[in-house]
Length: 161
Image (cartoon, rainbow, N blue to C red; front, side, top):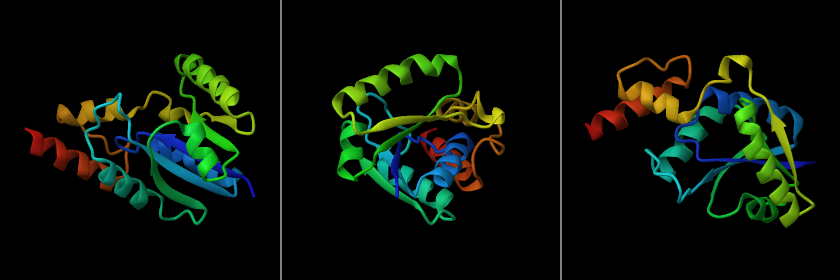
């Protein structure tokens, strides 16, 4: 059984993330969604809030586990005995960065491969930062995130106002 990790900040989890997860869960025996403590980003949601959102949005998958990590994804993959890192590619602009990261990860551990999934075309423009911005300005994100995530975004952003 191949184990894969799907690392990310997931601030918040979007339908694009979930689309990639659905594809990955159908290919790999076990998928860890690895929610990152990212020191280079200032997330809107705490790590616990992001994990709770991911859990609520992925409960239908029996082969998906939710976890958190701090540090290098390739090191986390080794810790959970994963042989694959899942990454999403929305556009050509993602490819350059992701290609470099995949090569560096392979250099650090040549037993771990990176597998790229393209999301459904409906989500190629979608990002967590775009979703947060839409909500900040009062827009509707119902088609971009699950209902629970939408409500959490509204609650969080209103409490900051």
